[in-house]
Amino acid sequence: MTTTKEGRVAEAVACAHCGTTAAEPPLTWVSSVERGRTLYYCDRCARDNLRSIEARLDTAWWTD
Image (cartoon, rainbow, N blue to C red; front, side):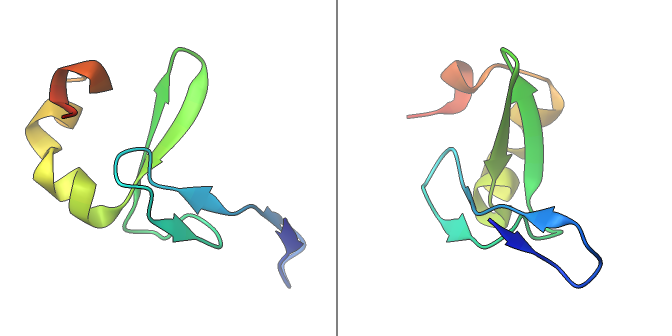
């Protein structure tokens, strides 16, 4: 966890689908709240599963 120059706290995140990591959620990533947990998906996984995400299907429906 790091503090940015704006004073907000940035936390490292990982893509819930492929495991790609980032120091903080990039603007191109998608966030989803499932069962009370906030999950993040990288731009590639979000693009590959866009229809399922927009249909609000639980990740169990669109993961391998």
